[in-house]
Image (cartoon, rainbow, N blue to C red; front, side, top):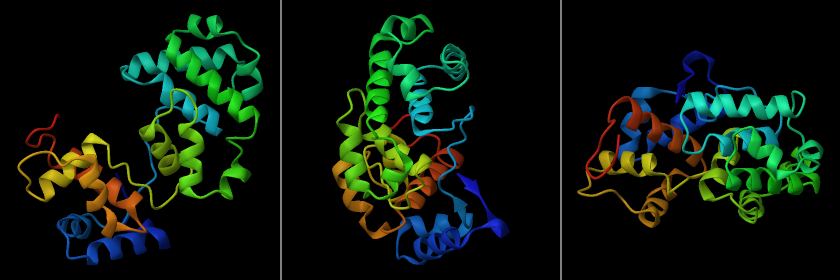
Length: 223
């Protein structure tokens, strides 16, 4: 969560004003925090395309920051400084494995590249699609689940109304704010997030910030 203060855009101000005006446990945190950049993912690498964003996201799954960076930089170097659909599709899986990717991660990146080669990750095309359409298309790619699809739409496409109800940190934050006895379920979290439309991406970022800055541990959750 990145506070923007006086640098806030019109959308950031509108989101903060709307979410802070609700009769809602999140509102007090929004009011004390002020406008934020909901989309900043704080990536440790520069990505220049949707495929590069996904390649880093897939590479870094269940790995430390150092390991993720080492493998990703080797992957970029393997493709001459940029990960493109054409280069990935023309490379065999073993070459991807040789830079340190697991079998499943190599398959997922190749599947993404094949779909990108067919236009799935074309920014002009994505701009014409609804959130639901993009989510459905991404979920059809082997190895891409709801979390990856939602984070891509939130962080890379900068869609303002994305809500990853299954995200544990989001659910832990709701649990703490609402003073629940146990961690809220994804289904209940989805319903809980309805009042935050059309700024659920902002609500998500506020919730992440609440969990990380004030409540690193909540009942039934993890740090």
